[in-house]
Image 1 (tube, rainbow, N blue to C red):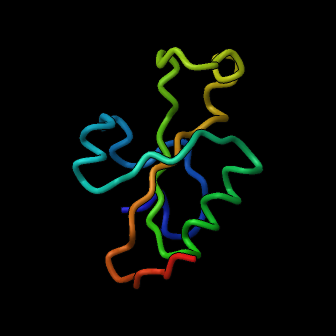
Image 2 (cartoon, rainbow, N blue to C red; image 1 turned 60 degrees about the vertical axis):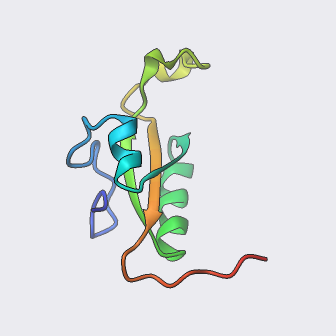
Length: 93
């Protein structure tokens, strides 16, 4: 499952209320938090590399540096990725 098949950036993915352990149990790996324009760039790059991408709201209560996220919570997303089912492995450098 990806956030969208057409490359658009929805506010939330289907199943966005899944917990981190649930996502990880399904093979998703937590990557990092981003907002635009880096969010779209990261999503495009991960997809080019053969990954599915899932965007979830940032859990503000994590205790990390979150002041900017509290001011604009709809702008930031936590990026999760996993290898697409049909993708081939990319060689490491």
